[in-house]
Length: 372
Picture: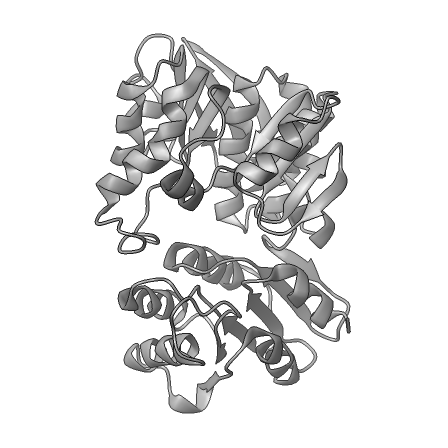
């Protein structure tokens, strides 16, 4: 979504397909999880589209293969444990192979996470003209002199809102934005969105966007629901602040926990935890451990699509993980489904509190927050 905003600022008609739906030039054409061939087809068959930004889901690749034969830029941001053990994927190396298929059809640039060796290794199998490595650490070898000739890096130099997002190409360095000017970082407190912005900037560079357009696009991508569609979407419509977020694995929960810790909250911190039903049992314990200690009260639930789990099982497993992490039972509640868990979490809040809703269906959660 950041990339689409940047390329729109660069003057292109952008088609976007992701887990929220399909948009062309900012107009919503379809809603739902369309990070697969159906969404891509809607974008690629639209004659007005000049730049296609396609979220390319691991599940779709695994079941159906790739649905395009080439792309200008391919980006792989991480290879985590989230999907290991599901749908016959035995380990992270296999998951890297699946995700890496997009790098094998990239013509110009592959954008890769410098701190993930499995991502870095995908460079070897790609015919792309160059790689762009992304790192929050400006001293990382792949963000500096360790890059191969012709390759690039996007990193952040400095601390706080004045820190600079820079493109390193050959021996030169170009400033693309400052952290404080990237609305989605909330002044640098949302560190995971600094990293997201680095990746978006790197992809946009590969697509030919000028530094000024990158800066404008990142400045315009704010934390409203209309922009983020439930990736750290903030609402102040109630007497307490509410955040709706799609996070459903341990790294996402940890990133939001760190953001909440850096935010000014005068009251309690309340969260609703959620996760897909088709994950291995250890996934729920890891998710709970990532949240433990970051909040004062926890509502544990599961999605409508249980994917083989018994009713209420996902919420109970998350709750068990919290108890095992040392959270007192009085601070943990289990509500069977997300539609009921949202009002339960809101009802527990008072003025000055912060409520974080980790939602499988962010749009429904947003409506429930606003009385819909």
